[in-house]
Amino acid sequence: MALVTTARAQLDPLLATLDSTLLASYLEAATEMIEGYCDRTFASATYTELLNGNGLHRVTLANAPIRSVTSVTIDDSLSTGTLDIDASTGIIESTKHFTKGWQNVSIVYVGGYSDIPDAVQVACIQMARSLAGVSLTSKDPSLKSEKMGEYAYARATGGETTMVSGNASVMALLSSYVSIRGL
Image (cartoon, rainbow, N blue to C red):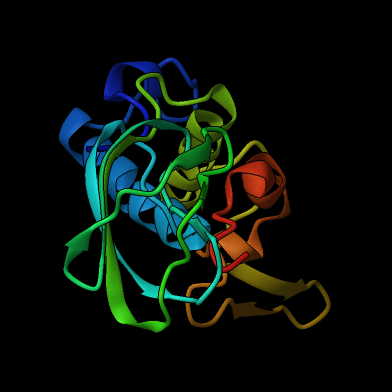
């Protein structure tokens, strides 16, 4: 599911005239790019994460905010340790350590946003604009350079106009939503 509805995206004057089906495709593609860049899913759902045990008392889940934790299994045994959950960051601390191992920790939880933050929705709309080839300026987003005398131009290569990391305003909007796993 896209991070922003087609109806909201069509409020943007640059996207308003696009066919709804095409716009929905751009929004889906923008969502995939944003969630890949942020290394997380934004929509509220029940998630099961397999994590590598780190030998510490702390792990970080990908899809904050955390609403609730259903179960924590370490090395195929249900953990009976007390959990301290930082809902906003997805950090879970346990009185029991997360035994070192490869994907030996399984955590089932409800996480994500029931209402996608406005900054994320705006980033999705900006990425959809880029994919559709429309912008606030008249410059063609696929144009890398242009010269007037003895006219010459160069196209951007390899998706420079569609990558999140190539769009400073989108990166700024998403900066506080990038997953902090690995702490």
